[in-house]
Length: 163
Image (cartoon, rainbow, N blue to C red; front, top):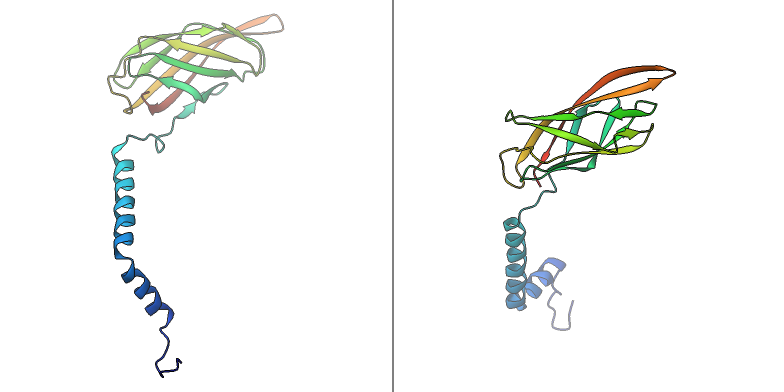
């Protein structure tokens, strides 16, 4: 209690009094926060859209090094998981819109665990940057074990946003 006999204000009352004294500052801070949130909402962001893959039994895509641009250029890094040196033949990609494109391997040979790049320039997904695409990739390859050469085909699906 104070000397005059009045009770000192409690925490909530003190907080309310403080807020009321600084109405202008609080209003300015509130406007700034609203403008920041509005600005964030106006900008396109792709953080919620992930690139995913399924299938690909032996040859694995490296998803963070894989992209399909809106202009139709595809680039993907893949890892040889066949357990031996492979020779990659010309691969094909079929998009959900029916478009098919040819993918070339660089280099054409990869040892077990090594990476190679598949690229193509006519993979038209028919969308704009940020639109989702879905493509099925078929990767034919040969493998030599001992003196026996066998031909295999690894197929999988990649989904992601057009870049």
